[in-house]
Length: 264
Picture 1 (tube, rainbow, N blue to C red):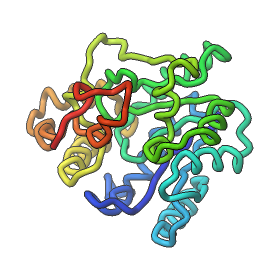
Picture 2 (cartoon, rainbow, N blue to C red):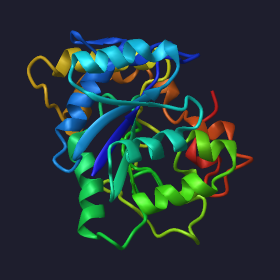
Picture 3 (cartoon, helix red, strand yellow):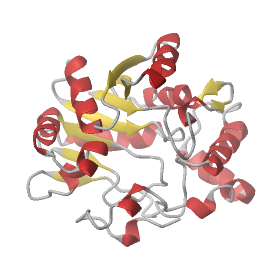
Picture 4 (cartoon, helix red, strand yellow):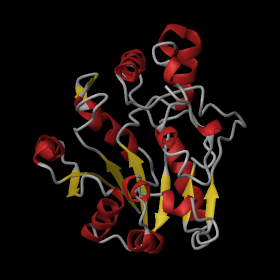
C-alpha cells in the first residue's frame, strides 16, 4: 500500500497553509504524523508540485525524513500516477489531501481495512460517496490498474485536477464501495475539520492547542467531545461547514448535487 498526501504552497484563499504552525510544527508535518499512525497506510509520501515555489516544501520533507515526489501542478491525476510509478507501487494507491490535519488514523484504517479485507473485489473504495464523517477525514484508495485506466482515459479538467472523479462518476465501469461512519450519523455537512480559509486554521489551531499537549494521538471522538465542551471552538468555522469544491462543478458532475455542498 502506498499512501500519498498531496500538498502545495500555492493557495489563493490561504497561502502556504501547509506550513502554518500547529503546536510547534508545520501543519503538513502534523498531518503526516497522524497518517503514519494508521497501521494500514503502508508507505507514506508527500507529493508536491514541480514548481520552484514548492522548493521549501521539498526541503521541509527532507528535514523531517518524509519521502517526497514532485510532479504536475494542475494535473493531480498524473501526479498520483507518476508517484506510484516512482515508488514502485504495484497494488494500490491511497489519496489523502494535505488539508486534513485532524484526520483520524482509525478512520484511515477502517477504509483501508475494508479494501484489504475485500481485496480483488473493488477498484475504488472511499468514505466520501456519500460522505458521513466530519469533513477532513477524506480517504480514497484505488487499485493501480484503475489508477492507470483513469490516467490514460480521463479527459475533463475536473477529472485531472481532482484525481478521482473519473471513478465515482463512472459507476458502470468501476467496482465501487463506500465506507460510512459506524455511528450512523452524518456530520459531513455540519462539522468542518479541513483547512481552506483563515477561520479553518483558527479552528484547527484551537483543537490542537486543547488536545495535542496531553494527548498527541487524539481521536475523532476526542475532538467531538471537545467541541461539545467548547462550543466557542466549534463556532470558529461553523459557517463554512459544507463548503467544498463540488459547488463550482455542479453543472458538470453527474453523481453529486446541491445537497452535497454549500455555496459561500
